[in-house]
Image (cartoon, rainbow, N blue to C red; front, side):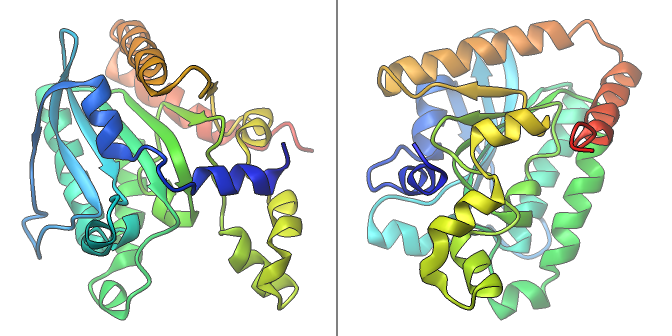
Amino acid sequence: MNAYERVRLSRAKGRPTAADYIGGIFTDFIELHGDRRYGDDRAVIAGIARLEGINVTVIATEKGKSTKEKIARNFGSANPEGYRKALRQMKLAEKFGRPVICFVDTSGASCHIGAEERGEGHAIAENLMEMMTLKVPIVSVFIGEGGSGGALGLAVSDEVWMLENAYYSVIAPEGCASILWKDPSKMKEASECLKLTADDLLSFGIIEEIISEKGGFDKLCLAIKNRLIETFDAKRSLTSKELLENRYQKFRKIGGNLG
């Protein structure tokens, strides 16, 4: 399967969204709203839940399903208040010792002028900085699209996993084709050049694991759930200093095998 076919599958109609994964993996989920500065961004779901016997914080970009819901959720493209809401929940997770799980499915952050006026770039940059020093384990799972800083703002994590038909890229293929060839129809060529598939990113050391989508949604949720439990159990033995050092070294080493 080529890169563009993966991109198409990541966007496929009827593909499970973040809300489906939250319902299929966790119990007792309670959504918490707002950034305490401007408002509540419905493109980001955030709250607390139970993962078997573990209290966790769950954060996700949510696209919605019906046309009405997609519009309400801005098609999963978060505004600055969405990133600030996410960071607010991460800091609460740190305060109470809860691991953090992020589900990423976004073509990119909101590009509306209001988002820029309210500090979109600063909000994403603040998340990158704060996530690097958060003293609890963080795992990010790419379940569909992973576009640019909009995705990275929830992906500075101890481990990054991708579904086999997800992608993670500095820019969407159409945008890349428009810039390089002045022709958005060349998105197939752009997809190959961007090296955006899970296989590509695993080979570069950007992600730690590819999750198979074979066997249906219930099997997929169970696989993610079991891996999360194993991961958090393993990280429980680490001190905060060790956790942060491992996270720092992970990002320092990215791309080191390319030269």
